[in-house]
Image 1 (tube, helix red, strand yellow):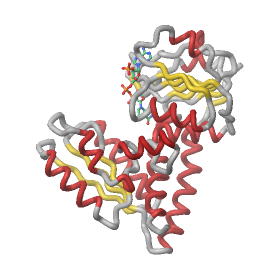
Image 2 (tube, rainbow, N blue to C red):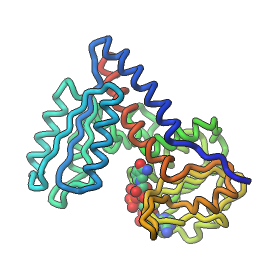
Image 3 (tube, rainbow, N blue to C red):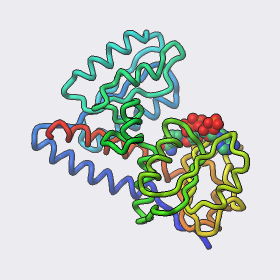
Length: 283
Ligand code: NAP
């Protein structure tokens, strides 16, 4: 068996087309979706990420504001900026690019964002909303994974989903989203005693670890679906995921590639959340 690839670029393109149309409709009602991206410091990767996010906003007809601050910015000054953005009617979503410099408490900054503008879904109120099934913003990466499963009309009810990784931004929210769709969910982490024994039982595996080849073909039940969130560099410096793609592709029924899988979905879901935040202003 060779697995069918779930193409993150194609799904993204389709979703972004819908987002741009909905943004146009909102504009005709006098609301232009607006995203503020706040960057502190000189982290090279962060600069690339924020550039991509701002460009995606522009391509979708959103208003975007990119605030770049030196890494000498104090925590208090950053909190004041967040407060100003919370009160800015042009801004519907606020994203603070992580990581922040060591002298700034990232959690404190995230908690300062108005939950109604928390389009990254990292605020404790957003996490609580996800946990209790209330309306709120879902973190973009696991939300994108759910959209990928939706794209193949995957019915999660009664399926066993194994999530490898338990971070607050990927693993834990991913598990809650799968649970909400009636999967039976197992969460694995670095202290899991026998990862292979668990993944072999899985109908769906989501790998969100940050280590190449965490999931190999011998760990996958034939016909399972595999979502690879990992973004790593292999020994040759090439971008790769957590999954041994060549091997697992021969066993799974569906698989997401890296690159071209979950990566493009993350920014797309940021656009979806920002649009949703703007839409709620009309309600
Ligand atoms: P993280 O905060 O470092 O969490 C990694 C998780 O993996 C932790 O829960 C850790 O367990 C677990 N883990 C580590 N080694 C393990 C092992 N051998 N077996 C099982 N579990 C193990 O990372 P993250 O932020 O969730 O990101 C995970 C990966 O996704 C990274 O490669 C990141 O670059 C990528 N990512 C991609 C996107 C995208 O847009 N495509 C977005 C976000 C993240 P403990 O909790 O026990 O330490």
